Amino acid sequence: MSAHVILFSLSTEGIPPAFDEILCMEKKNLPLSDNNSPEREHLDLFIHASELLSSSPEIKDILDRLMDQVIEVIRARRGFIIMREDIDEEWQFITARDIDIGTIKAEDFQISRSVAEQVAVEGRSIVTSDALHDSRLRGKTSVSLYDLKSIICVPLIIHGRTLGVIYADHQIETCVFGKREKTLLESIARQAAIAIENARLYEKMKRIHEESMEKARKELKETQAQLFQSSKMAAVGQLAAGIAHEINNPLGAIELTASSMKKQTTDERFLKRLEVIENATSQCKKIVGSLLRFSHMSQDAKERMDVRRMLQNTLLLLEQQLGKENITVRHGLEENLFITADECELSQAVMNILMNARDALRTSPEGHKREITVRSCSNEGSAIIQITDNGEGIDETLLDRIYEPFFTTKPVGQGVGLGLTITFQIVKKHNGEISVSSRKGRGTAFTLRFPSAVKNPDKSV
Image (cartoon, rainbow, N blue to C red; front, side, top):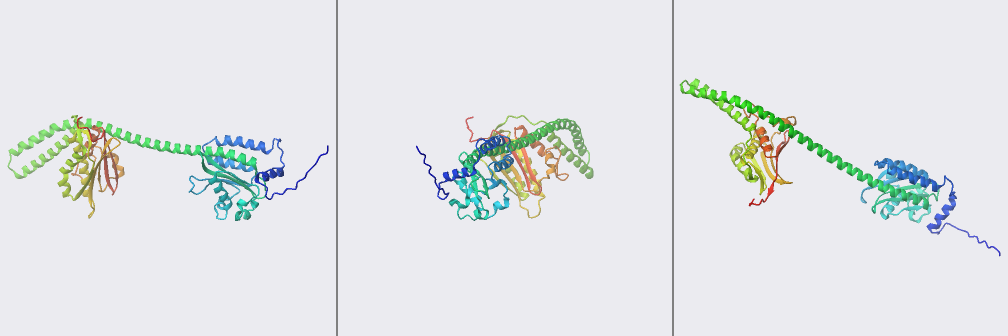
């Protein structure tokens, strides 16, 4: 039996990609069993990539380190990883090797963009063994300009969405990349996509956690301030009660003596002095009365109260007085808003704030339109009352002291500094919260929040 040997003369022109790849593998003529073989290097890189990508949430640093090893193992000359949040957004270069970022962003660097865009849109890898003779890249000036030979580009896909691409090329050799490099890079890309998504989720959770912690810290600070204010008010209340009782007796004696002396004289000059004593005594008694009310807030039974009606009645009492001061009152009062409260006490609290707003507006410059705005609404199960003025505002350094007894920024003789102190106590008695925001020259806003707001209550209850 004779053997027949048939020889074929082969050319790369017109050969399908699969055969072209086979010829490239033959051209490489690399051993398959050596410990330093591509298979061994690829396996080592794959294992190391797995460990690296799961080692830290700092994904940019990891990808930067990984890119070095990918370039070395697949024997590329250049490479980069790009990502974008959405298809309409610009590509963000995460890392690059032997390619200047300015060059990447230049208008004439089209090869990376066109290949990357195609891979991102189709979600499929592109491998070319000879870019200069690849019909898909024909006409691309960068191919000849940069003399690109071998190109490989794989997508970073997670949940069917392309996050970015891994790109590498070689400017000198053809047939650098084949099926093995494509399989390796796609495997690494899958792991990298998962790591990137996890890193994004980590950053999102970290941001949410930080925002929650910041909110908790703010709420804790506000709660601590409220508790401190309450404890301070309680201590001052006990002191005020003791002082008030001690002062009442001598004040009564002074008042009786002055009254008796008025009956025993007709001297006009002496009578005027006695009148001054009586007025001063009366003023002292009013202050003592305020102190007693502050220290012994009544525990009267509360009833369901229409917030809108209470505010309208309070504004009606002050309508003439505010009108004389050329103050315009605007209001937006929600209907069917009810809370359980002592209407007289709550009206007093609102009146105290309105009087403070009036006094603040008195110092407004000539021509300044004086306005007070009163609003009420329901929000998350609470009734909100807000009183805003466009007066001179309160200095930020003084905001922590405005509820202290006898603290006032008004001129001597225009207030004793108990209005907001009593308001604070009334709000606390109703399990409410009071807060203030103010900017010098921009006005002040007091916000009262009360629990258990009910819209359209059942009248049978």
